[in-house]
Length: 360
Ligand SMILES: *Cc1c(COP(=O)(O)O)cnc(C)c1O
Image (cartoon, rainbow, N blue to C red; front, side, top):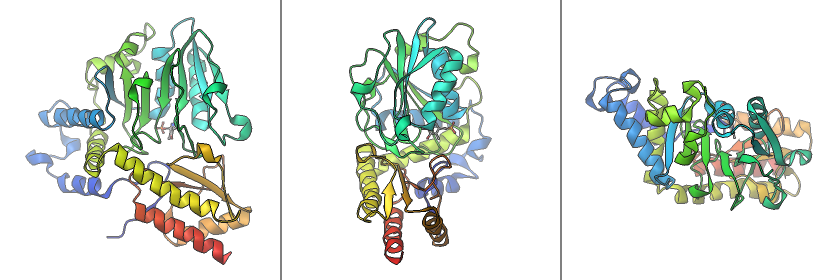
C-alpha cells in the first residue's frame, strides 16, 4: 500500500504501526466484541486504556508524582482561556512571551480574563528568533510566565528555557511535546493539543503541578476547572475515548523506538537534512528563522521570488509531497517533520530540494 509523503502541520502524520494496530483491533478490541469507540468510558477496558496512556506519558517524559496528567477537550485553544482562569489570581498579572501567532492568541484570551502583559516579543523581527532570557521582563506581581516552546507557523523553537524564574512557567508545547527530553520540574503547567506530535485531534494533554490546582477563580464552570478533571482522573464527563486510545498507541510506538532521547536524535537528523539543503543552496532557498532559533519540527523557507516558490510547491505536489505550503501569515514553504514523519521521507524531500535547485 502506498502511503503519502505527509508533511502536514497538523493534523499530521501518525506512526504506521499505530495505525496498523488500530486497524487490527477495530472490530473487536481485546476480545470485547466492540470497537474502542463503542466501549463505555466507565468500562474496565477503557479505564485501562486511560491509565496505561497516562503511565506511558509519565515514563516517557519522566513526569514526577507531584504532577497530574489530564486529558481534556477543546484543543490548545481552550487552554489559552483555561490557563488564566485557573492560574491568574485576582490582583496579579499574567506575563507572556510573544514568539508567534499562537502566543499572540494565548495573550489575547488571557486579557479577556484579567491583566495580561507582554514580557518579551520578537514580533518586530517577524518572529524570526526566540528572545533570550535576559530580554524577558517579568513584573513582580506576576502569577506565571507563558511561553510557546515551538512556533509551528514561523519555524522557531526554544532551545533553552528561562531558569530560576520567580513565577510558574507555563508552556504551550502543542508542536514539540515528546520530541526531546524535558526537565519537567522547570514547569508549572504544560499543555499540548495532540494532533501534531501525539496522536489525532480531539484530546489535549495538560501536565500540571499539583500545587497549582487550588488557584482557580471561584465560580468557574466545572468543565473549565483543572481541579474537577484532576479529581475524576479525566473522567468527569465522557472523554474523547478514541483519541485517547490512539494517543496510547502512539506512545507505545515511541517507547518501542527507545523513548524521547532516541526521538530527539532522529529529529535532529531529519531537521539537519532540510536545513543543509537550505544552507548549501547558495541563497536559492532562504530560511525564515535565525539559525540559533531554528525549529526541529517545522522547517520554514522561501525561494527567491513568488513564481519560483509556486513552481516549487507545484512540482513538489506532483511528486507526491503533501502539505509543504507555508502558513498564510508567513507564506513560502514549510515542512513539518514531527516525530512520526519517517527519516526516508525527509531524505526524499531534501533530494527533491537539491534537484529542484539544480534544475532552476
Ligand atoms: C496547532 C497549535 C495550536 C492550536 O491547537 P488547537 O488544538 O487547534 O486549538 C496552539 N498552539 C500551538 C503551538 C500549535 O501548534
